[in-house]
Length: 306
Image (cartoon, rainbow, N blue to C red; front, side, top):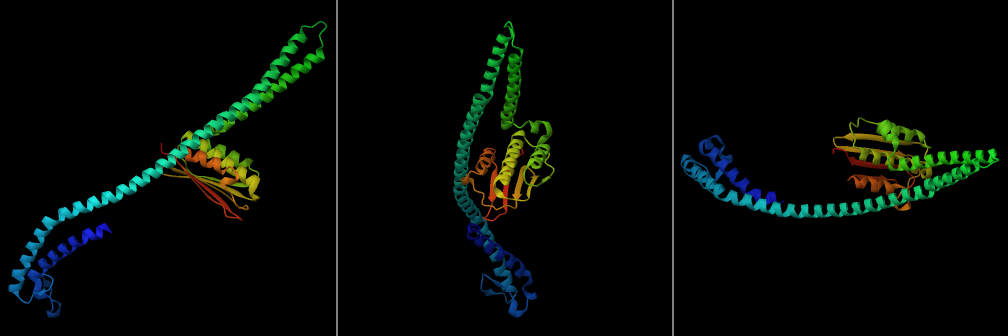
């Protein structure tokens, strides 16, 4: 709008200069009823008018443009700066609010994750290791008895061995929840293939040319797809699902779809809130389209150009 207001006088001035330049030597080439006019409403009927008013109009409008255009341009620039500065300030304020909220969510999620890991280690692995140590101590004591109860000692060692295997299994589960080993072993393609294959609903997987993806983005994509497919299996009553991963420039896109009953909502504890927290932590976006009756489509976009 400001461009029209400030640009219209300049356009009229330049247009009338062009009219005068054409009219002065070529007025005679126009039909009588179509002959141009100088100074807005003065018809050019002969050489006297053309050679007098034509150069005069060119001179006056050129002087006017020389004097008036710079102030008009500066005024237009000031107006644009004022308008754009307000827009930029609002956008920055909104961005800061989003980042502040995201950082708080990430810190809360990080704290909850640390508490979960501590609880799993304390209540699971540590308890099993204590039980193993106690059985081994009793077995050592029983081993030195005379006479020695071979069956009792064998039972203690067997229980200790089984407890060791269970403790190792629990440790692998804890490690997998922090950073899935399959990502390090098979990469993102292989990890997503394993997740799709293990899904309880037939899942079609389509992975494009992703080039190099930062490890942090790989982890978020892996957990997002795993959580989304878990939701499909548990809640959607779907008979088919799909995962498409693609990259355009420095943006990685993940689309998870299913033909289930829909109605997915962050507030219902279906795991989407966890996906959103992980994605927002990397300055990504999550869009959920899940009308009642289905189908459901979850779109995740993440920056991966760093």
